[in-house]
Length: 350
Image (cartoon, rainbow, N blue to C red; front, side, top):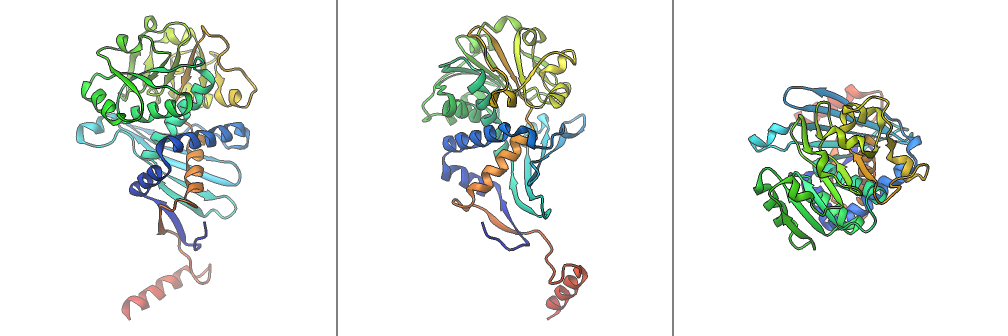
């Protein structure tokens, strides 16, 4: 991609939708998952820090930075569950990639849609290592904005084609089923959580309320299930009964962050967990037995966003859905920034 020094590729919401549709959503998810796996294999190359969070009674605003030494990336993201009452999204986001050697940004993009895609791709990557072999049935508890993406990622990567949907708002389940029509799923809309988990080898919980909730109770989790816990992702917000955690092999992204934000905030600080990168890199085992209950305690980590930004940038070379954003000052003489103002003033007066 060859651009002027002062021009940054900007992927708007409209451009992101065009990009995803041009590539195809299932192919996009598969290729994005491959980028995540590749970056997790080089985990030790990255700067790592828990996200910088500003919490309020209404929600949270966060920055998620990382760098591999050559490229720097960050995401700005909010989480405000009450927004839906006013017709707003619970989560919105944008992201930036920059060249470490110059500090110049090389990509600015919406990340509301992209975060949904990367979260789903990350869940399915975890499923590759933690779900029962040949699993085809997934319960999705919470049928909000993330649910269709989760379903499609597990279908594209693992072959899941049977969905059991439950939401306290039945209209959300009906919408999810309508949106997934034509994608090859056998969909059952359930009236209770108990009904939803019947026969499901994979259980995805993806609810939004910012509270310590018990979406899934211990008696509902049988041997051999893979739990993809997505909704518990900030302090004071959980979805699973503590007893489930005590029976599960627990896998996390970045332990210091998950101790604060994940389901494991319910456990002692020294409770054993495995970081998923170690499994992907072949250093530790994932699922060890057919009867084992495995839990991916997903909170989202900056390296996944880095992977998503990296993937989008690579695709712009062949699928150029972006605008050129005049973001950076580029004076004729690098030290003469004031001179730019004078020339602009003269041009306006002419």
